Image (cartoon, rainbow, N blue to C red; front, side, top):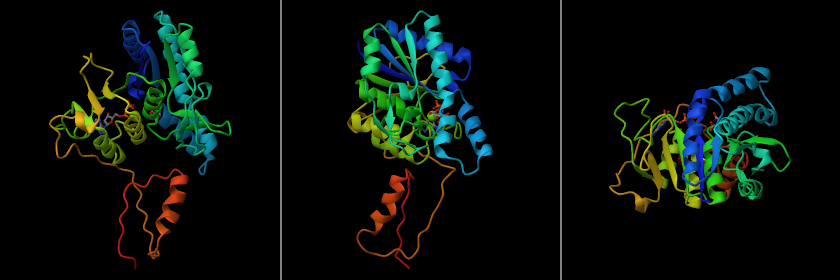
Amino acid sequence: MPILVMKFGGTSVATLDRIRRAAKRVGREVANGYDVIVIVSAMSGETNKLVGFVEETSHLYDAREYDAVVSSGENVTAGLMALTLQEMDVPARSWQGWQVPLITTSAHASARIEEIPTDNINAKFGEGMKVAVVAGFQGISPEGRITTLGRGGSDTTAVAFAAAFGAERCDIYTDVDGVYTTDPRICDKARKLDRIAFEEMLELASLGAKVLQTRSVELAMKYKVRLRVLSSFEEQSDEAGTLVCDEEDVMEANAVAGVAYSKDEAKVTLVSVADRPGVSAAIFGPLAEAGVNVDMIVQNISE
Ligand code: ADP
Ligand code: ASP
Ligand code: MG
């Protein structure tokens, strides 16, 4: 069977009623002949609540325990989605990250995906399971600890599954009906884009447009995943939403695709940095290893 990946974000699974609505969409794709991998986020607000609990309990918290706590929101929605599908007579089973297993690096709270073996889930598809519901945002480190992929990480889980399983498409269902020229909740003149190139989406995401996690766009570009962003609240035609695709496939490309903003940047200035080869690597190498994302680098004449 061809495989489809469908990801539902927090607002799309915020109540049991919305989970049922999402499950109906999944049921329709199963009826269309797909084996479906559903990636779910935690119910809207849950992850923030869990992060708050961790910070209140321990100011300089152990990141391994942070991951143990904040990953739990997705476990709830994965089980509930599988149950809802079963109630609709769709054979479904839930999977936590470690059960797949979705193997990541050990960079807790901002882990990167290393590998997604497909055998376990494919074996279940072979036995007649039609939907694998996978908890987004979480994985397991080589040391056997639960990890998370950074805020918004379920998008990345979805694209990574689409790449690993050779899915026909990866549909990201969210609370807006596509990618806009800027955040439609901030600017009512924002226009929906029918298509946007991977490179443009990557820039928008990395500069703050949280509609897709940056890493998910990187992965989609690398593995040529057909990535679509669409609303889980409206009825959708096949052409709905925004297709994130190769530059050649964007007709009527604009000189400027959009505007993004970000409210949580930290600016760090290093002074008296020696002007010799190897110094940049000495600064940025350890940052990359620690999973610290450097957005914008401005280099002045050394003092
Ligand atoms: P989900 O919970 O489904 O993952 P998110 O809240 O992470 O949803 O992302 C969707 C939100 O991204 C929208 O509600 C919107 O406010 C915001 N957003 C920011 N920039 C854009 C943009 N250019 N186009 C669409 N949405 C955007
Ligand atoms: N629940 C996680 C978050 O709020 C992951 C996600 O929704 O993508 O960041
Ligand atoms: Mg999100």
